[in-house]
Each structure stands twice: as C-alpha cells, then as structure tokens.
Amino acid sequence: MKPLQNGRLHLGPAQATLLLLIALNLLNYIDRYILSGEVEPIQREFHATDHQMGALATALFVFYMIAAPLTGWLGDRFRRKPLIIAGATLWSLATLGTVWVHSYWTFYLRQGLVGIGEATFGIFAPAVIADFYPERERNRILSTFYVAIPVGAALGYLAGGQLGSLFGWRAPFLICALPGFAVAALYGLFGREPERGACDHLRSTHSRSTFRGLFRNPAYLAATFGLAMLTFAMGGMSWWMPEFLRRASGLSMSTASLVVGATTVVDGIAGTLVGGWLAQRWLARDHRALYLLSFWSVLLTFACGLVVFFGPHGCTIPALFAAEFFLFLNTGPLNTAIINSVAAPIRATAVGLNFFIIHCFGDTFSPQIIGAVSDATGSLRLAMGTTLLAMLASAAILRVGVRVAPPLEEPAKPISA
Image (cartoon, rainbow, N blue to C red; front, side, top):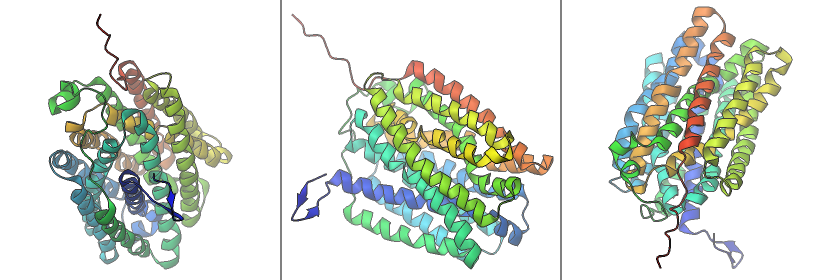
C-alpha cells in the first residue's frame, strides 16, 4: 500500500486487486445464502419437502463440483482476469433471474447456474492472491480475503429473512444481484493479472507441480480431505440452521435468520481474523501451525456442536456462538495450507480438484442428507447431529496433516569449503 499523497490513499496493484476480490467474494456468499434465510416461504410456494429443499443446495454444488476441474485447467493456461469477470457476471445474472422463477425445477436450474459462476471465481481468486504474496504472508492475506465468507453469508441470511418477510421472497434476489455487475466492471478496470509463481520460494517438484503428483502429495491430500469432511458439516449446518432454530427454539423466520446472521458475521470476522493471527504467530515457531490450528479448531467446534444439537434449550444459542467462532478459526490457515502445498504451474488446477473433492464429499449432499434424515425420523435435531460425525473425521485427517506439513521455504544450502 502506498503512502498518502495529496491527502489521498494510493493503492498498489496487489492491494487494489485484493480489495476487489474481497468485494466479489462478499457478493458471492450473499447470493449463495439468501435462500437459506427464507426456506419456509419458498418451501410453502413450491409445496416442497425438506428433502427437496436440501436438494436445492445439492444442485448448486453439483454444478459447482462438475465445473471446478475444467475451470481450474483453464486458469492454469489462460488469463484469469476475464474468467473471474465472466464468473461474477454469470452468478449475478442467475440471481437476478430468480425474480421470474415460478416452479421448483426452474429454481433448481437457477441454483446450478449460480454454482458454475461461483466455481469460476472461487478457484481463480486464491491463485491470483498467491501470485502477489510469498508463502509466509499468504495466511495473513488469505485470512483477510476469507473474512468476506461469514460477512457475506450473514448478509445473505439477513437479506432473505428480513427483506423476504417484508417484500416477499423474490425481492432479496433482485436487490442483491445488482452490485455483482458493478464490482465485476470495476475489476475489469482496476484488477491486475500477476505473474504466475512470482512470489514462490519452494521448488516445483513432481508432486507439487503436476496433476498426477497431486495424488501423491500428502500435505495437499490431508488438507483437502480434512476440509471435505469439515465442509460436509459446515454445508449442512449453514443451510439448515435458521430452520433448526425456528423449529427447535420456536423463533420466527425473521428472528431465526437474524440470530444466525448476527452470529455468523460477528464470529466469522472475529474467528477468521483471530485464527489468521494465531496461525501467523505460530508459524514463526512451527511450520506445522496451519494444520495444528485447524485440528484444534475442529475439535472445539465438535464439543460446542454437541451442546447446540443435544444440550439444554437455554444453551443452544450461546453454544452456537462459541461453535461458529471456533469453526472460523481455521478458514485462513486451512485454505492457505492447500495453496502452499502446490506450485504455481498447477495451482488453479489443484484448487479446482480441491473444490471437486470438498463438494463431492462435503456440502453437495449434506443438506439433502439432513433433509432426508429429518423426513424419515421427524426430527431435524437428530438429522443435524450427523454433522458431528463429519467433524470427528475431519479432525482425524488433519492430525495426519500435522505429520506431513511442508516447510515454508527451502533449507539453506551449506557453504562449501
């Protein structure tokens, strides 16, 4: 960042690009979570079951998952700037088009188009950021970038619950679609395309720089599958939590979305920033810090989740607040672990494969599975408890990642006599 000149703050190319990518990430998650904030009126209009409502989340992630490997391949071979703009424009168009949706299956298709647009942006943004900053700095920068996730999710919940209650469920989609076009245009004007690998300090070995090598890269695999199991839990919880609070605690739709939205934004900002700060300090002493912090974060989230779903009613919301804080601690560190485990020539492809895996084994099916268990048992509380098993699996995999964590720079070569 450049100093003040003539009373104005001048941003360098890296800072300007980062700010615009954060804005796009914010809008990305707003558009994704509007639906979660107003499940009840949409379900009522389309006469849908819980299983069918969960399937709307599955639709988004199926298309997201299928598009991810292809977009990753494109990102390693073509300029990423126009691809990012195209993705943001596509998901904004799909969100705007929701205003004219009047059937369940048209809504299902809308979800798929949003998924394709989000996959395009979500893969390229971390790769672009990594080319601006070296390995030791990426955790700090990516933690800042990922603050947009909880803020965007919270705003999506609030837009759906509050605006949907006042103006009908279609209004939030119209209002939240328009800023995407504006920020995509600004990225076209001010965003920059950095040189690939300009800030990498580690050698491009076979396991770090080839597609086949990814399947023999233990650090990449541990972070990816650990995140996949965590994503199963996160996806199910984030999709159903407002409805869970409405049914379990007797809250109205608007109040439940307000509670989840407020909790998500406060915990998301605090947890993501605190997690990034802790990991950055820990990295100064231990190169395994990204995996270690993620491991303990998941275990603490699991403990709080037990209270949310099966504890006393009076403890539900306080435990939810604690669970989300611990959950967000690993956002920057775990995503940075994935980025640092691979080299620039394969980075977008690696992120694309990561997206395919985490959604295939994670949130593509978890909302639908939870909905099906809820229909079968008559208990959304019991269905939500399935996310706790995924958290335990995530913790076990991340503990393996601690043992295979890569260094952050090459060891110094001895000086020959």
